[in-house]
Length: 471
Image (cartoon, rainbow, N blue to C red; front, side):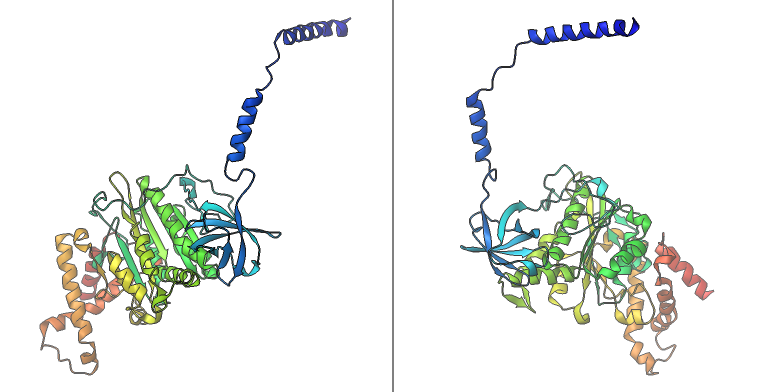
């Protein structure tokens, strides 16, 4: 019968497989000594069965004091605060013989006495190429709703190259912003500050600079930014095209001081990763002043005394430690060109933060509120702005022309009050007559908005505009 015949080969195969299995000797029993040895090593592994921790003994608005961690904690270590409502993270900012002070990444209002605290080790940021086009928080976690980001292979960045191992800054690039390319041209690996009061067009200028096609990767750190403006800045000001090659690190003004402090370090770590790959990286930090405010809040909360307008001494140590990480890399690496926004409190350019940053970086672009009030944007003051590497960026003819333009503008501005009073007489000073005729046209030629697009040849655009005015 067909069904019975079909089952015979299956039964024979099963019998054959059973005989073969019976012929294989059973595996030897595990060696008890080996098992005991493995168990011993597992138990000795740190944190396998027992983790040494501490407990909260004091809670402040911005800091938490913990007992029991002094012998094992290191500055910069992350700690985990456990409770029935979940775990929160903070960072060790001061170590005393009996206590450590922790600055939480989240607001610390829900911490309580005797809360359990355990050390997790230092925070590691491990970027990879897939981070382009993403928006992250200060700890490297995505906040753009596009799913998780995958970490790279790990390992420390090359950090600050040795002064003699750094490549020389030699190559200039066009930003596309006429007033900058004419008066304060930039080079790859340069660190440039944008100094401005609030509402003078600082963020718009930074976005125009970020749109330059000269860079492989753009890293933006928004430190203490207003939450309402983050999407507007990334989607409208930066734009979809530039955002595709941009990694944005955001810490808004309502976040803790530790998150605002950590954001710039995370952005620098991302920039270092792409620099070490050989990319030409543009790093934008907006703003260094709000970073200094976060550094001040953390330092004073941990007990450090202020030394200059409320700023502790560590602020002026941390700023150069961060900014020196930008610049050209060692041989074979790329470069980090840093554009650093400095918010001038009360339009006082002698503010300690502004004064300190000005002495570290390679030039400064000053935005003048009076120029903005005249409707001239970008509101760059060419007389107060300087690029310390301009002579490496200008050609000889461009350097001569830029110098003459500055001299003419200076003569025009120095005599503004005299002309307003009616004391100026045409024909008495030929150089002043020339400045009075040409400088208003120069100012018109320098007006530029993001909608105008970048300028491929700013000197040619200026000459074309002046010829049109004099025709």
